[in-house]
Length: 161
Image 1 (cartoon, rainbow, N blue to C red):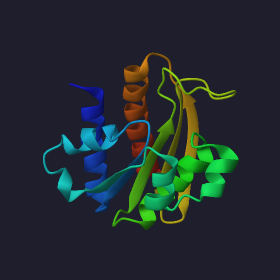
Image 2: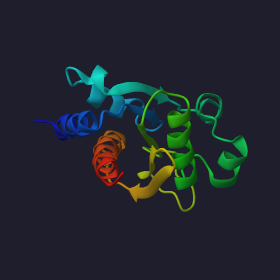
Image 3: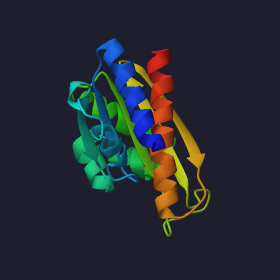
Image 4: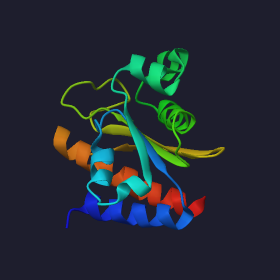
């Protein structure tokens, strides 16, 4: 069984136990997390919506990420991942959210942010956790690893909140 599918099933069970809804805010994964989740029959019981905010403007318009924050830290930063996750929470009916923003490649690297750099955010009420990872491989591999890591992180976040 596909790892993302298996993790999405686990996420669904964890959310159902708490009677929570999930929303996603994705950039570099282009909806890959939401796709893994909606592969699960019955996910409409625990999945509210997904935001695909690929451009900086859409992050600001749809998720209320301050443009000044993007200018200060860059779109691929823990600060933006946190703001995306918090924006998804504020603009949905979800109880918990996750976000992804990164450089899947092959281009886009900048000093200090090589290809494969991805930042994640998870939010619930007034709690937000963010982190940065660097994944190896081509564009597809980076995106696949990002989806898996986002779901694993979400499971941990649900358990701790």
